[in-house]
Image (cartoon, rainbow, N blue to C red; front, side, top):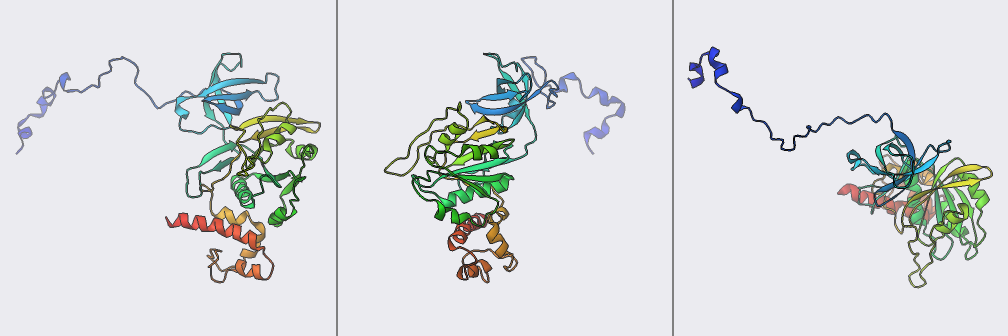
Length: 349
């Protein structure tokens, strides 16, 4: 029998006193923390134009009578959330845009699209490039540096995965004929391609496609992307570089992603310039979207056996047979299979 059995119920209150209650010390005498956050009903909505060392440049009251640029920092509760160019941010504090003022980003509106990339195809940690883009303009040079169709394939897959319409402009066509390079994309009937030569940018045609849209520009370093941006947005003042004659590689000139307002006689839009890259990892992409990015191959693959991997050693793969009878171009199938092999290796691990 426990000693408690000998204690009368009426005496229970006498077993404890206030000294038995453990209270956590609060030497600063401050209020306890709470998970409840203020609603910030007074927040205003702005477009994030760029970020520099933790400071966000935000456009408030876009196209309104009180349109203004302001600078803001992120709230502590958003420290784990990526805030990128193109985001629609909720801002409180001083949003006048006066010199020396600083607002605070307390929330991000729902995004219509999110363009992402990873360090490589095996890295599933995504890096957000831009938010709320409608289109992707892939800039590729016909020469100096030579075009890389498989890098362009990666851009197109990332655009499809993000729900963004792809466009392409081929620069430096005065140095080489891009026709052979463009045959790699013959199966993409919806891909609009612009051609440009030195000092002969098709700005009117490209500009027509930019009106009313938010378009992110991507491309390998040295292809002339920043030069094109400066031609479309004269006050952009984006740095331009050259291609190393020894390595054939371009030098990174745009060091940050920034939104620039484009205007022409037909209307306006947004040009989002991004730093040049030499690789574009797809570790974050749904593998099912890879084949969808090759609509000509996807159509033929519908005849394959269920569960076909479409790899070179896949039994009864119609794609492999289609190369022999000329229905599928060998280089295009090889590009698809290299990506599928990469994702197959990732799934094995």
